[in-house]
Image 1 (tube, helix red, strand yellow):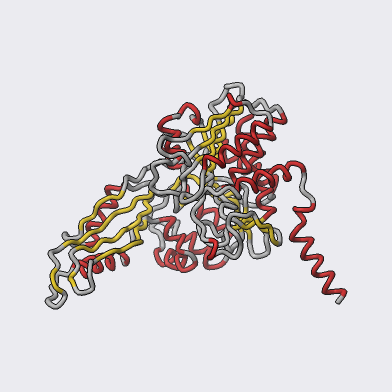
Image 2 (cartoon, rainbow, N blue to C red):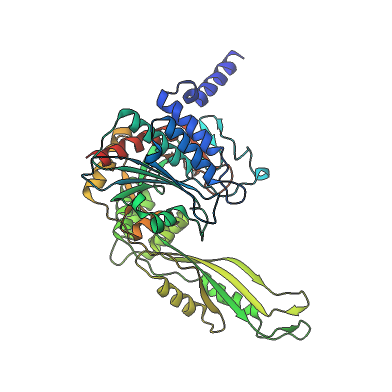
Length: 466
């Protein structure tokens, strides 16, 4: 019994160690983080405006003046407010922008183990919707701006913080980063920006394996596929069935692979990862870097994780279908939504032409849904990489910094398209199970949150002051 109680106490102490021994900086971060997480910012029932107002109040209490911040609420979107804060430097360099979105995806309480809109700390892990994406980074930026203010930091660059709304809504009429760029560029104009998209990886023993820096992302573009015909009574079927034609085209698309293409970023990713991985995986990573690349090696990597295929190819996948109007009638219309994630080296027009060719049916009409934004890959300059690698190595000695191309999407696409080079790097490490982003029981390790805050504090200070 004594051994059992001792073991239980050790477990409880391990899980609550951070809660019991927070530094003043961490305690302030904890309060900001909890308030932000517990402010509902979903599209359906939440308000980014309220969350932005709460953060503005904290910044005022920390010494920032009204003249140093702007609450920007786009016309027609009263709940879509954005907060922009500026810490003045001496103006010898263009500003540094710290960008984080404060909206979150929907969360159904009935599906979650815990209340998704209450910050729950269990066994060294924070659980909540937005606990990782992206309120961890947003809260870190707010807390760190307060630290800079308290220190009376006088950097060479202005440090701008932008907390924005509707990043998770695609497409959106109120995306904060896009709206600020189009209507208030003077408030966020910068030489470079730090954003979400990069994170670290822990192994099963909680040991850091790698630290990612995201440089660039794929283009988000959806298409509608549609087949129409006169239809008729189901008792007298036509061979020319709208559902059948569309289905056959989707099957052809599902079997099609877009061309393999590496960029400087993805080549660097596999070069560095090949030194971390072992055995067949490491050998296969080296093999796809050959000229010509070994496609059998890529298939083996795909079996390890579909992310490998998405890293080196444009992908298009059917995500929704609708067809017909009655059980006893032939369909007059069949539609499918196809979502594509396009490599930066390719264009939307090229992909649309490829879709039409692969579908191989002139009766399947392909139209764009919205207009995907093409953005160049930001350069990984030696000065930037040195700052990130040295800051990272001071906290996690020997853990390599790995460049990555995002297969998803962030607000960085708007800034990169405008020449404000934007990089995803956070210093926040997740385990091999992932973090539940956009899914159930989203979480982040308590230690990872505070380590990430400290990393971002050091990195932004260095980039603004050098």
